[in-house]
Image 1 (cartoon, one colour):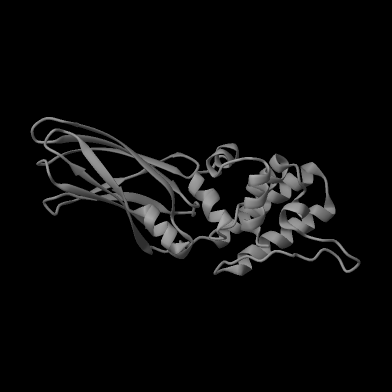
Image 2 (cartoon, helix red, strand yellow):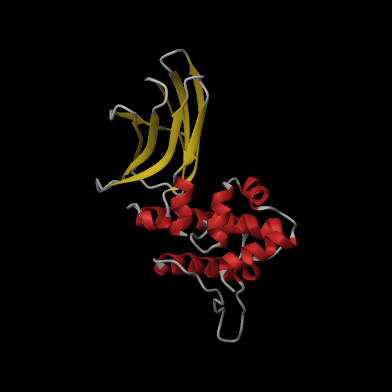
Length: 243
């Protein structure tokens, strides 16, 4: 049984939906879905929180059995970078053997800092976006639009810059830098005015500390002459294709 299957099993045993589990752990429903599909691995603090929530030890959550030769991992993880998972599992087993809540908390924080230092480059194969939402206000003959955007990253990378590119119906590109609202949540506001009946394509641009940039299509907005609008989600479709 993979780690993702184990999480799904425990979630269902506790009669929780993906959305409900996400709320309890402070992550999005899409993040829970990626964990259960083995498209991503929960961070150390999320594993600890799940163990407390489900009433199981980390051994039980990770399905590790102890024997005379020492603890042996019994999980299967389908990720492109297994060495990162190996670091997490090895550190968890070491922490479990040492025990002590205070020491455990200190070592988990130290481990997270080490993993953050190693993961200083973006990996689009693991998904860049965990959630995307926007508030839209439309009015007037020329379709004046106020946008407030909320972008949640799948993970934070040191030195990363995040911005939005908005391609309007006239072929003009509007760039909007985003600011950190909280944790991995970014937000930004902009105002546009263009004729009705045009489509606005929204993409996120991520640049890591090495200067490598990746573009992720997010959403298309079509505004009608009566000031109504409809949207087509792009990032969620791509996420499921990657998963």
